[in-house]
Image (cartoon, rainbow, N blue to C red; front, side, top):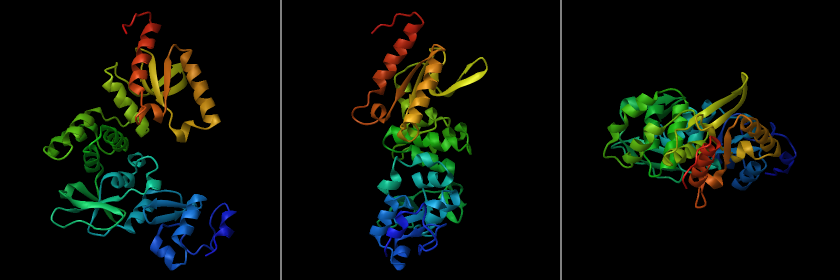
Length: 322
């Protein structure tokens, strides 16, 4: 198939031999003589989007829960339950997916109830899981762990960073309470990584708007600084100046996570600069953080947070010991 005729178009048109409003698989594409190489090229041009490993959709189809469910139904057997990150994604908590996971094509978490064996294929992370009837809900024709069970599962991982990010994202759905989350933690005692869930669940906060914010808040707490308030609003004369990602109003100290998606263009950076200048005129100290500060070997957010808190205290005339 010659795809060159599509490259100058804003979107694929009706001459494309696959659905424009619903997902399709690489197998279905092959039947229509659209090769894997052509699929990759169309994705590179933004005309197709890869939703899951082996599942594609036309760019103009957009995104919705039913569309995600249909994509999963193409690759999930009917006796299985969608769990973990993809269950959260299906419930609407997009942030539970790792950054660029749609590009890395991580395996889909699909499990069978205990005693039924595991799937053995190249697209799923599978096994058996002790699921009770109340842990599973049908969503658009798929069996999926409930939001609460999904949160408990996502909190039981080795590392605290993905745990707190996922718990925040699931709480943000506002379909279960923090009290319900905490009440079920001990159900999983003696299970793998229960210590992470016990530690992170009390810190979960649905006001966080990105994984970067969640991890930055965790680092703030680990520094034993005065507690941060997510999405704190600063006013001047009744006019809202800014909503700060993390702030302590007593210190008038704030930290913001500048993710690449919303804070990288010249216009976005200018907006951030003007907004923070307005807030600084109200005697606030606001520090911006990027992924380099928060993640990886060169992360230095703890040092910057402690230094920022000292500077904020000094603004009030207090001498801070080094």
